[in-house]
Amino acid sequence: MSLPIVLEVIAGSPAESAGITVGDALVSINDVIPNDVIEYQQLVDDADPVFLLERNGLQREFTVAKDVGEPIGLRLNASIFDRVQTCDNHCGFCFIYQLPPGMRKSLYLKDDDYRLSFLYGNFTTLTRFTELDLSRVVEEKLGPLYVSIHATDPDVRSAMLRNPRGATSLRWLSALLDAGVVVHGQVVLCPGINNDAVLERTLAETIIRFPKLATLGIVPLGLSKYNREADLQVHTPEEAAADLEIIHFWQERALDAVGRRIFQASDELYLTAGLDVPASEHYEAFAQHENGIGMVRAFYDELDRLEHGHASTDPIVTGEWRSVPAAPSEGYRAPRHHADDPDPADGPIVIVTGTYGRKVIGAVLERIERLTARDIRILEVENGFFGGNTAVAGLMAGIDVRAVLEADSQPAGAYVLPDVALSGDTFIDDMPLADVLQSAKAPVVVAPATVSGLLGAAR
Image (tube, rainbow, N blue to C red; front, top):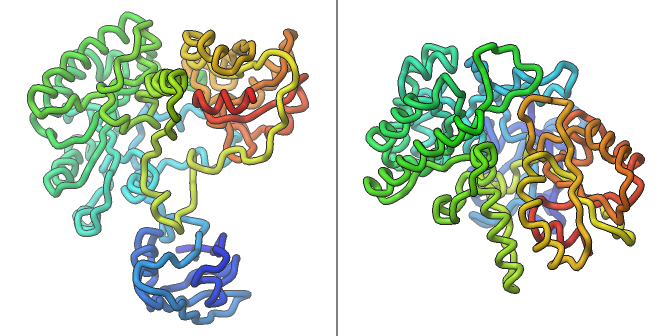
């Protein structure tokens, strides 16, 4: 067990008044050694907690004078202090198995930890879930959780997970729902494996076995050029349309049976099938927005509001880490680009995005131009780094972005990059943003992948 380290002490907070400083290592609170930031938060919510800290190799106690529930004013460097529960499944469709070698180690970590599901919205299969875990989740009301279902047929599910426990681990999903825990599910749809008739069974059985499931997101398989699984294939437009027809049918059955549609299809399925995304009510509060479900509709709805002079709204963020002050932002929730960007020069605004982004923005480009009062063009970045059907902006690699900017010969007043392509100032292939900036002939502005983000970048 590694000791969590204090990353930040809020000025004027009880922690600062008590003498706690950045770099201190947390040993215990009130003689209790917390295993994670959730337990830590419960301990520091008490009045006058006593910290045992390690500083320069020596341990020392600090009593923090504070009221019950008063924020203590600390941020730590980790969310799990004991050990992340790693995944013991071997899903052939797991994108981690499709990464090229030599990338940063954190990208290769497969977790199956319900605590990270609660904190960050990560999906867990429940194959390593235990009675003790269930007891804690229920007692501490740790929800919502996010569960990968994939198929309700036990044989299909265990084969997909390559783990015999996959056939029985959905019993934990029933137990969680029966205890009143909010759970969102996911199906990664693999043509020829769990789509078509298997998908029909999964959706039908979900209504019968798991009617309390908040939502079930159905997302298509993502394949990179490093895939080595011969039986995996991406959706054809015809297959995507057929699976959407199944989803739409069972949405209506769920609406009749439980009063909610439950089932929500990924934007990628609609884009692949060449179909329009449905209206906002189909997404039921956009609970799986960050899973690529409803992003297109949310983008278009935001555009409608701005055109009518209404305020924009922030993107939906799942997970509880923002409500746990000490929890660090981790993984794909790590801080995006924060530096001040240059102002655009004269000339068109150039939106740099992936293949799917080009389709979505291209359909409303004239409307965005009217709002910005600027000429806008789209520069598509084909994903050569990953290949396959990796066409989302969040997986754009620096090497591909740099090559596209170097080859661009048309006028440009500024290039606008979506912040989802960056972690800090680094692309997923570990290329620094600075290396890309050197290849651009116009200022580069990093902006949120929203309409208001584009408007701000084109100021």
